[in-house]
Length: 331
Image 1 (tube, rainbow, N blue to C red):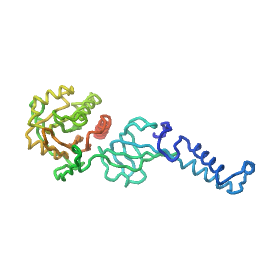
Image 2: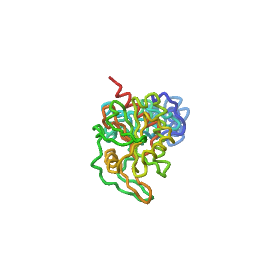
Image 3: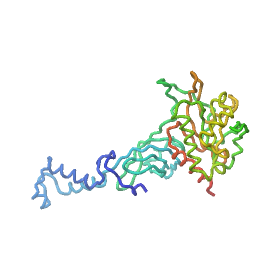
Image 4: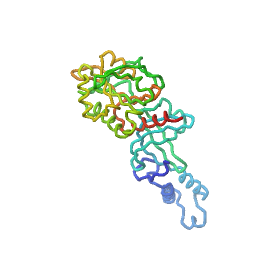
């Protein structure tokens, strides 16, 4: 429960302290010393020269119940329940309030959840009152139709080939690091996570970060990798990333061959598959400019979630996959 955590002193809020009582006492002190000018002897007798005692009591009660704490939250959507007006979010540490974890948060209206789906990365404000807690000012981050490239803002064209969430992912066959054919439909019954990388990527916070996240998944799901969970990393540089190159790259990440495959194939086939997942990429001055997409496919072969960018944490991606594993295990 949210209320099970102690609140710190440095949150952003209307009171800026941990107790509504202290907030009310501060208001009362200002009122006495300001224009109210309540004389001590009159207050002790229950009367005031300028304000009725009942008004003071009402003001105190309002402040006791109205003071709130506000905490900035950043996380990933794991699930949405509009009927219950809740969102399950895997969030990062909330400073001075709670550590990173996955939990449901309430919103005030279902409209606050509009446009959100599993995998969406969001920022919001957690409001904590004595009467309960909720999130507000929910804003989706990432997933923009434009990218920044060396200071230039490039608007991406619409992608009519992108598969919508909940739809079946079309089958494809590519070649793995062992020069063996791999067919997506061959993993039916497993949850499949897919990302797109290339081994010569010079940016440590993009392709290497994506691969590091998959490496963490191997550790977290060590008993389920290759049995219930499959990881597929598809190169967008197939002219260079031949099977033997991908094999060397897989060894760098200690990829378990039964559960983590690195795939390559003809340029045209790679492009078709990448566009279905919403990828955009093109060669430019010796490197490949590209967006980042990580997808989760459920046991029935449907696109269950999609994560834009590479700024998510391995824990958040793991929470997203774990929720899918639990959901599809349910009778």
